[in-house]
Length: 286
Image (cartoon, rainbow, N blue to C red; front, side, top):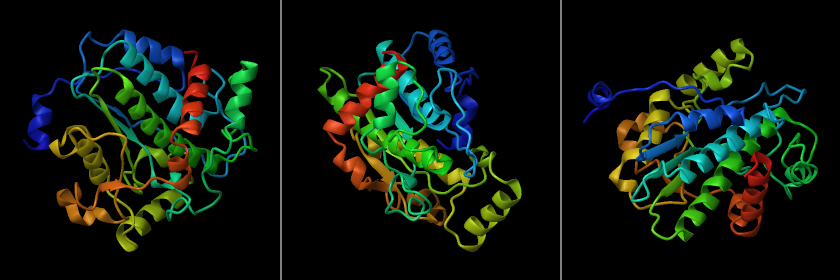
């Protein structure tokens, strides 16, 4: 079935869910129909202007980028699983991360690299009960790094989530994360200089051919949510080399495939990943 035929057969229900406000997430989940979903995609995200120096915050006081991109999804996931709204017999959870979580990737090497350090920022925010942190590692605010950190958070979240799902008796839910590639022509870059964004879009996708189309990025998410090739697989990070849009639909499962996560993400399996999860729980009030 092609995408257009599938869309015509679907009943789409628009609903409001502000990931920068935990109360909005509560109301969203309460309004969902009492049925389990085959797939849940945590795809929302924001990126501040890379030159921003002020610390914008969510309704609960979290730094806005990590608060939205990680903690909002983390809390939503908790409510969905607690309410048995994801099919335990084979449901899928797809988390949109990014290659910038890895300092060894091309995008991750630009500017200050992603690192959560020893989680000092989250530790302090959880200990004093304020929920207010500027950076996960406790350092001075850096807008560009905050976005990279949030993507590293997404990877740690997906991997720790799969470990917990595997430990739950009778649960066959699988969680994976992925990088859609560099896609400039979306609302993610709305806070950047618009002239620069338009020029960068043309340069990345048309000239240098390292950017991806929105169709390709959406197809990557669709592949993880629906493809039989992914069935039964969990805890993985999917990635394709820059410019893989040129391969079209044939890229999924070939150029777009399971890949290594960053060294920090890999080393976080177990102790640090578990502590990261526990701190996230404390911050959102679980």
